[in-house]
Length: 171
Image 1: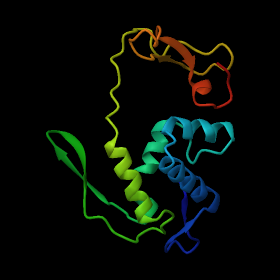
Image 2 (image 1 turned 60 degrees about the vertical axis):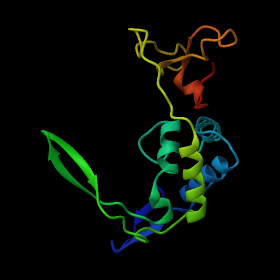
Image 3 (image 1 turned 30 degrees about the vertical axis):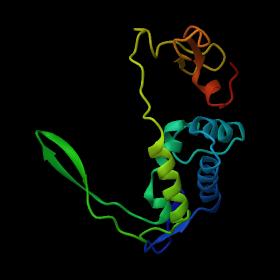
Image 4 (image 1 turned 180 degrees about the vertical axis):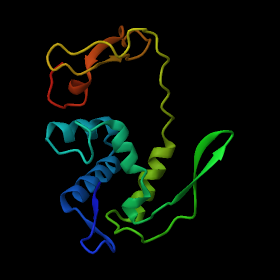
C-alpha cells in the first residue's frame, strides 16, 4: 500500500504520505500504543486507508507491523495442492527487493514486542444474531463488546463498528 510500480515498470517508488503513515504506526507501537488505538487515531484524523477498506482496522495495522516489505524484503510463495487444498508455501525471502521505509532494528523490536504479547483468543460466538444488528445512526454493523466476566466488566453490549474504531459515528 505504500509502494507503486515506477513508470518504466522496472522497480518500485515510495508513496511518501503512505510511508509516513506506516512509520507512524511503527513509532506508536514502540511507544506502547495498541493496534486498536492506532486505528482509532488514524480514523479520527481522516487518514485515508490504503486499500478498498472504508476505515482503519486493528487487523490491518497488525498486517503492516508484520510485513517484512517495510524493510525491503519480498517473500515469494508457490502454491501446491495438499490433500485437495491449495496451500501457499513460502520460499526464500529476497532482501532489498523493495525500497525500505522502516529501519530493520525498528521492525525487529516491534516483532519482538508483538511475539511477547499473549495470543489473542476470540471468544466463542454466544449469540445466534451476531452480524445482523445495524447501527441506527450510520447503518454499519454492530459488534459485541465483552469487558470480561468479573464484576467490573459488566454485561456484554453491542456497539457500532464505525464508532468503535473512531470512523465517523458516535457510541
